[in-house]
Length: 638
Image (cartoon, rainbow, N blue to C red; front, side, top):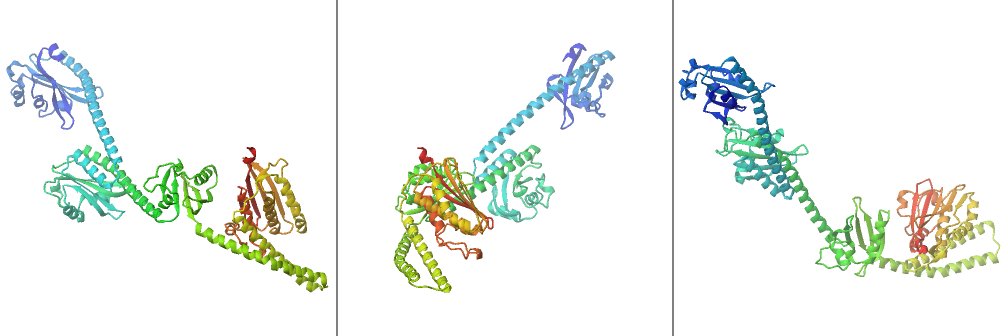
């Protein structure tokens, strides 16, 4: 030490403050011959501990404290102790010297300056040491938490989460016992528990007691500590070797889902850092427990759904946004003639190797429609109604229902209707012939003519119904249309002109907006004319006098759109869902007087689909209706 050399002092030491015990301790490397300065510096007045200098002369050598320190009291004139205080009045420690000469004012001034500078250096050194120690502790702590998070995140069962949580808690706190109890909902009724160093019988007995810090932690939602079990006779029974107890609530969404309780064999047992770690541990365990619960629930739901899918006859395939199979029912494997033992989950849809289904699926990917539907004949030889529905979160669900039996029934019905309709045509022709003959050979009064006209109208309606039935039967039997390039505008104009007299008789307005450069589409002119005639006729029939009908066409993205719009009666949402069904007619008082068979729109829809087109309806009751037809024109560009 510099002061020993400068002031001819033979021994000395530097001591630092122990902040926990508020005493001075020697620095080993800065001690020259003084073994116990703390006895001197903590004299009756404790002056150095208060930040005051102490001077002891030879006259004080007889004191008990001095004799305990000095080996040869006669060799020394006195002792001098000076506090180490920084410029910010932070007390760092003290310097103690044994002097063989009297210390004059100058010597003491030198020591004071030296102490001030030394205090700053020692303070910085000590702060640096503390910072390094704290940093090392923090690094170790973060590594532990990182390892803890890694282990918990890889765990998907509650049992394993309990084991890991208890293991970490016991190792970090040196606890002797540990257990976790979980509660049912918000009732604080223990649903199950898991512990180390406890038998099931002991745990059950403990849980039934109402004076436990475990229950108190759950009720208050705060950490509970008993530092000495003897001082708390009201606390429930614990093994005799347990001297201290710690209970930390496990919280999730501001709700207590469980409590972790630790027991220690030492009084005072748990340090503040240990309590803080356990609190961090249970926070992470709460998330892991929740994840494990969700995983278990997901697995159970998956198993239940798989059981349901395997028990139904419908073909069900769920595909994610990347086109990979997420679920496939057993009936799908059978219907598509796939390998029964192979797991198709995770495979691309293309692995099914069934081109008709893949074609519909590709169309669904490119379409903006929510649902794509088509009838397909699967490799098992049966007919299926196939629906591909887009999912909100991406991906599609493919549902295929076996309609083979329905199609066979429908075929037999169609054959019956066609046969009966054909057989009815001859009697109707005979009836019509006799009605015409009666008018030719006889003269009737006005009343009789009215009856004859009614008879003619009934015969014509019956003949129209039979023609529609036969036409629908031919279409559903699979009769094909002769596809060839067709100019749409002349066909539409011909249909418009054929209904001009009906429009004029009702004082209606008919607007036609057809561009001259409308492209050709592929189709059969006679069938297209049948489609347009039906729609225009309906628009006129269901529009009151002085209303309007608009017919327009446009091209959008290689698709020809034809719109037939009216200001008529409109169609309710309930009726819209069935408007294209066979024999379905809107039944309202204002439509009872309008003639119709209920087959026209059913035939229109079939014919539009035969032309690879689509038809949709937009309508509000009392505000008219709009029928939109779309036909592809991309074939012609090839």
